[in-house]
Length: 138
View 1 (tube, rainbow, N blue to C red):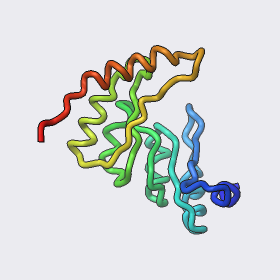
View 2: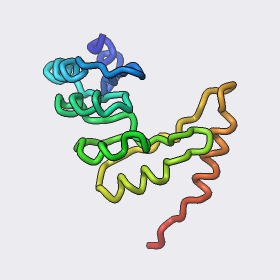
View 3: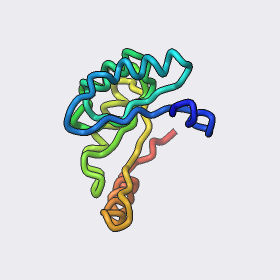
């Protein structure tokens, strides 16, 4: 299946994990994909899944919030910063500031909820967050 996605234009194969229980085989799966020349990311908040995936060569972690932030310092790869609560972006500023202080490369995903499931509140939270950013003077 990964080959199909790469042939269809995917640059990175994202390995998703199920919330609630750690997938013990994630490291072996990432290693097998890396051995075949795939770039791999891991979609989990669980450090028990992320750590073996990173050791096996995963290069991007989706995602980091305050629940797993302390562990992100040692992963040695780029992460995606997300809020704890998408509707108001709670925790996102703390996560961004800490990642910057540690020198961890990151992307920001404010998590826009689907229409009918919190779309307007999530947009409102992003608006408030962006309005509160202060641009540094050069």
